[in-house]
Length: 137
Image (cartoon, rainbow, N blue to C red; front, side, top):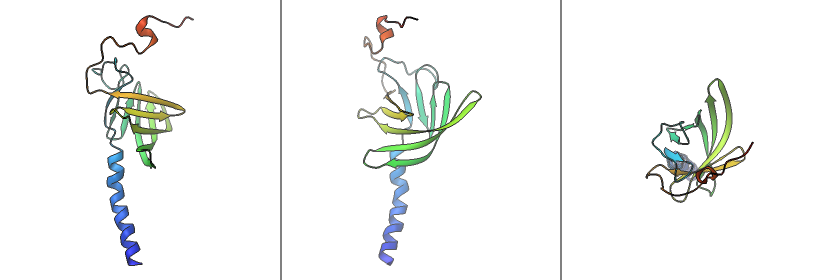
């Protein structure tokens, strides 16, 4: 009985360190290799995660109640968000992309962001607008 209690206490003490390691998504991210990372968070397409706060285009979300997703090296968060006079609560799952970027699954959509560690790629076409295709109304 004492041995089981000691194992349980050891597991509980070790859990926060493992959870903290998985939840470190801090960084600046862009939606594609040609996007410029020089703008402030929330301007243009750059998003940031810092100290469990996600800042996106015109929105800021506190990332709370992290839950590790078993066998996926991902974390599910409750997102308490605000934009202007609006506020809402949602859930989002974050995980590291294989090359160091960020994958975010939010409300039925999956977003992949590149890390803002290098200059934007030159001459790479990633969007229709880049080659002059525009949607007609």
